[in-house]
Amino acid sequence: MMSIKIGFTGGARIVELGTDSDMQLFFDCISYYVPPKYPNQNWSLITDRFYRRYLKLEELDAAVALMKLVEKEFKQLDREAFDWSKILSGQVKSDLDRTKSTLFEIFVRFFKAFYECIESAIVNYECFKSNSNYEYEPVMVTISTIPYCVSYSQIPLSVFDNLQPDEKPIWWTGKIPKTTT
Image 1 (cartoon, helix red, strand yellow):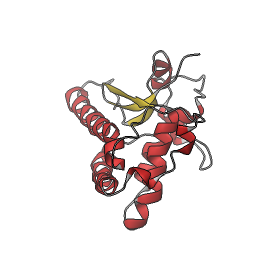
Image 2 (cartoon, rainbow, N blue to C red):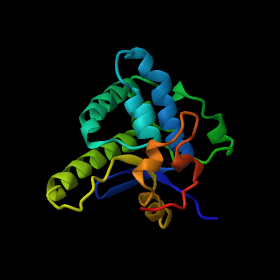
Image 3 (tube, one colour):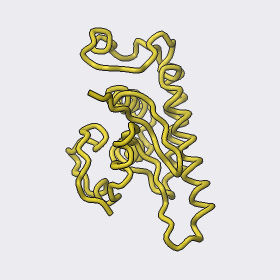
């Protein structure tokens, strides 16, 4: 069976980052450690919009500012900030390097990919917005394994918009809707 990988996409960029469990752990660490320190920030932009849906063009600047706060906090958190037992026992597949010292070092590729995808989305928008049939290519978590990434990219944004509060992200469930645009 093929191993499905998860990553970030935005504009013309797709960056493969690891397993679905790695991605879930990244967002779990964000949700657990960062919002309590910055309660006046709109964390749903990261913990819902980016995690389960996609970032709209007008949300990118705010999302970058929030991710900078995540970076700051992750630099202060030791690798033992979360429980590695499921990964070590093989219950959960992971591509994370557990020899790194801090959460930032463990997830540095995630931060780099996030900023690359933001930049790609903005560059593509600026280059192609005058084309009448161009549609903004949002920044989002995606299934990055070929051929699944092709099917994932064809999911109408309305499907993401209509996810119910208790629904898991599509990249996590792997249930790509049959409907396409």
